[in-house]
Image 1 (cartoon, rainbow, N blue to C red):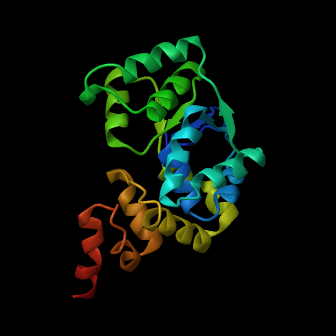
Image 2 (tube, helix red, strand yellow; image 1 turned 90 degrees about the horizontal axis):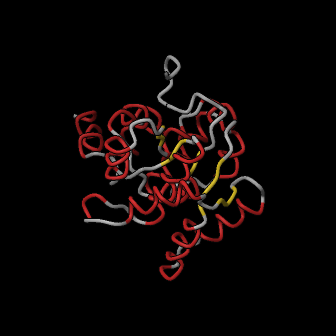
Image 3 (tube, one colour; image 1 turned 90 degrees about the vertical axis):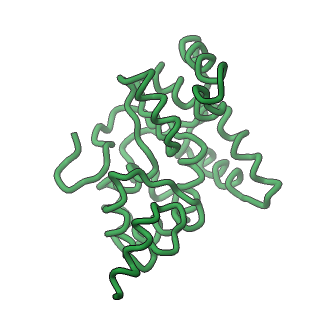
Length: 212
């Protein structure tokens, strides 16, 4: 259950948050990933295939891999490996027709979260849909759930948080699920929402209606 007024599902401090590449990239795009992760009561991990996946952006001039290494060196993010049970789940998620399989990073994130009873932090609709169909007991979160955590706002302050969310949207092209759109737009404002192409078109058009 979510606390009143809070849009995050991350209300239990005990489970490990298993972050996919997209979530890490979005957090780095905020410009204050260290402060955000430090504020969370949960342990944050990435499976060992995720750093390699993020490193593929280096040839396009992206620095995400270096920023992730800094977070690991600071002890804020831990690298983990799949155990035997997770490895079996991983196989089922990467082998088969494209419509029912995922990339290695998403599959490893889900498999590790199942094995460890953690929360898989994913931003892709296909991944969340497959989880709902095949692993209904698995708890899922997304980057916005992390950003909307009351401890994160408490640590950053609302103004810095709004700036962080805008940067994740604008630079990281962060995906936003429908149930989070109202919170995001309410935080960053309609003018900033209008230039964030990863937001649904309806959310970006609100600014035009606002000025009429």
